[in-house]
Length: 377
Ligand code: NAD
Ligand code: GLY
Image (cartoon, rainbow, N blue to C red):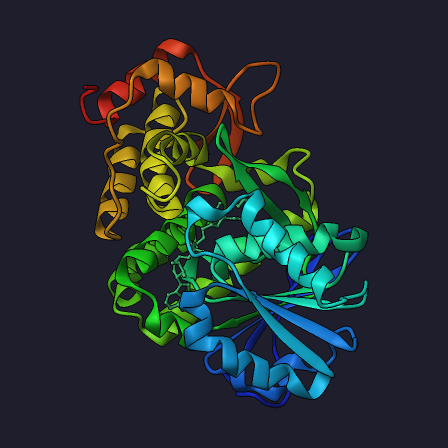
């Protein structure tokens, strides 16, 4: 299925782009542009309801909560805000329950529309709350990190973490719209911008060699938050993700390629304690390790590993994994949604722009870990 890209007609600005996501059961738009939070056209045509609830965290709410509330005020009789503690370490049952507590205490019904205002943590948890509250209420993604704009807000994966494994409890549940206001990226800390670049880089090796070349050529502009460069990066990432999700919404096969670098990356995140390494940092390092594995399995030349290492480092991301005993790596990587019958599987690159899901001999994986991580204590 092809993602359709078109300019949004009329206001808010001629520069606004729209990418469509179409799955078997639904279709929705991703709007991309600077200033969309305050643009009335971005908020028309959503499901009508008496109530709306904005889910955010104190950091993002202080920056954009009032603007979003004012923007959606013409469409809902009553709007309330619920704030979750900030951070990956709070992507858990306790935070999720804060949403349910608020929805129930304030009498929200099954037409209530939830708005996820924040990064991937808020987006994944709001989506899971929307999927399960009264067996499903509509929700809108309003991503405010680069990572969320290029990846987590699109495609309907919602989840919380379990101490034993990342995103282990969740649901596939699509938003009714995604509104990416590029102006919100101005306030993003640099470390978070870099983390988001990991997921932008990911799309090149798995799906689009031309985009990989473009990222290499425009990385400095992206790091400088050049608006035109960010617009293209968000749009192209969303187009590529929409194509994959349209073809395989529930990860029967193809969608697994979006997990390039994530088998190693999720192990780093869980092993170091959620929040110590940012998701994007772990994915960046994981992509270098998965590239090495791909080369060892005969998919790409050694020069490709070096190319990925340089790109990851230029993006301000770590390319060397933390020290962890090798048995701990294996224990963590076994708790991965791609594992089957106890066999760990990895996304490997067969050629720039082409990826596949493969098992790998333990000895090879051990070698990659040994060569790409700080010496185990
Ligand atoms: P995050 O949600 O923790 O946000 C990063 C930090 O930036 C937070 O402290 C947040 O408060 C702050 N922040 C957000 N927007 C800001 C802004 N505009 N200005 C200033 N500060 C801002 O992290 P993330 O990187 O956005 O998301 C990571 C999460 O996304 C992980 O839990 C990961 O598992 C998930 N994820 C999900 C999918 C999916 O398909 N559902 C895909 C990729 C990642
Ligand atoms: N970020 C992985 C996926 O959406 O499938």
